[in-house]
Structures are given as structure tokens and as C-alpha cells.
Image (cartoon, rainbow, N blue to C red; front, side, top):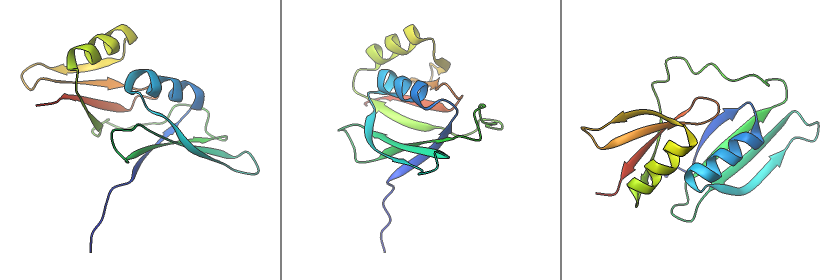
Length: 122
């Protein structure tokens, strides 16, 4: 038996803002979307050509406020081929939340406060 990870879900309070963030910060674009007939939810899958793994952004009409992420002790990691350029982009966006210079990594946060780890190719 083999299992393959296919997507991660983040619930978001403002779908358009989140999609714009992920496209600018990480180059992720919409792959497909599901919209409830009654308008109660929209699910958008975003990805890039580097992997078949997708990030699922879920917007719920009855939850317009940001989500309580608890102690934020989780993250999604991205490996980047040009670490310095990525850092400069994220610095200009003002989304760097934490840098670990000893490990050579940093974390950015999306509009809802989800942490995303940025790792250089080694």
C-alpha cells in the first residue's frame, strides 16, 4: 500500500487577498475551483509547475473573520532555487515573520497568519 500527499488545506477569510498573496509570494496559481450552489463556500486549488502538490484554499461565507490558528506550531515548507531573490521579495512584501540564520531558513506569513517556511536548495 502506498500513499502520496496531494494537497494541504488552509481556510482563509478573504479568498482574493489570499490568492493574490500566494501568486506574488510563491508563484502559485489557480488550478481549479469548486463553488457551492448556495454560495456557502468556495474551494480553490493553487499550485505551480514544480510539483503536483496543491494548496487548497477554502473560503466559507459564514466565517468572514480570520481563523484562530492556536499557537501556530505548524507550517508548510517551500524549497526555492534563488533564496536571496525570494528573501528580497518577501522582505519587500513585509511578510517575513521569523528568520533562523543558523539554519539558513526563514518563515513568511500569509494574510490569515499561516506560516510558510522558505528553504534554499542545498
